[in-house]
Image (cartoon, rainbow, N blue to C red; front, side, top):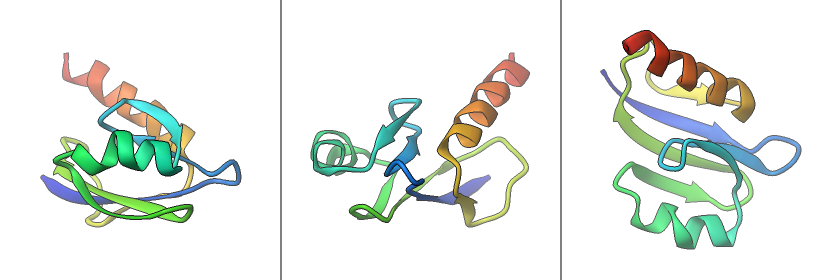
Length: 84
């Protein structure tokens, strides 16, 4: 199912990045180096949140709100293992 993922920065200023499959700082380097060229990018509010859209095989709501990037990272790894 296609879902809009709204990834809010945590206290450390980090978000989960599906493109890189890791937790990253939502800073200018991330936005210019990755978000700007990412086909999943649906908008960035630097220092606040990033919205990304893709077909997600998990049973999630749309939009999918992410407040803890480390939990999202772990769930994405579990999803990949379940699909195998």
